[in-house]
Each structure stands twice: as C-alpha cells, then as structure tokens.
Image (cartoon, rainbow, N blue to C red):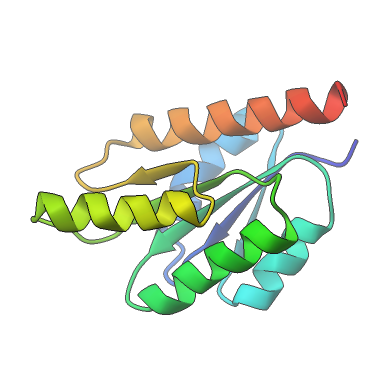
Amino acid sequence: MKHPRIVIYETDGRLAEQIRDVARENGWLVRESRQAEACLALLREGGPAVLIIKLERKLIDEMSLLAKLNEQVPHCPVILISDAKMENALRRSSFAGLAYDLGARYVLFPPLSRSVIEDAVVGLLEAAIHRSTHA
C-alpha cells in the first residue's frame, strides 16, 4: 500500500502547516500544490489520499479542480474549506449544494477550530485507508 497522503491545494501554505502535526502523528504525508494539474497528478498516483481545497480568490479555478477530480479520481474524498465568511445563509447553502454536486464530502465555513478540520481529515483518511486495505 502506498503511503497515505493529505493533498492540500492552497496558495499560502497556512492550512498545510496546521495539518502537518496530525499527519506526522499518524505517519501520513502532506503534499501541497498550488497548480490544479499538479494536484490531480498527485492524486492519480494512487493509494489512500484526502484532498483539501482551500477556497480563496480563484473560486472558479477551485471549483473546476473539484469537478475534474470527481471525473478523474472519483474515489478521493474532498474537503472544501472556505477562507472567507459567507454571511448570507442562502448563499452559503447554495454554494455548499454545488460543491456536494461536484463531489465534495465536506464543505466548511469559518469560524473553524483546528480540531474541526483535523477531525474531518482524520476521519476521511482513516476511511480511505480502511477501504484500500479491504478492497
């Protein structure tokens, strides 16, 4: 089995830094990508993986990545984490609905505690590892 990986698509590296501790504790790798095609290549390598997409300023690019991932690597669980508050509940639910339609497993909006993000990542990656060892 390939080493379990957490792949993070973001521009500033802050989320990756936050996830490194939990990854290190579990013996998982953290891979960062700032380009969609490089991110997809990391996920096509196979083995258990979770993708975290940090939604920032290029919303169309980030949602396009989610759609491509759903087509090319449909078994990879995805967490979308919004970097900005969406004050309007209707806007938030519409956006989340679109993200779920495109294949996201979780869509998280601020304020977020570190434990919420870690729990989602750990749960999804442990499930991916379980599936890969029992397939």
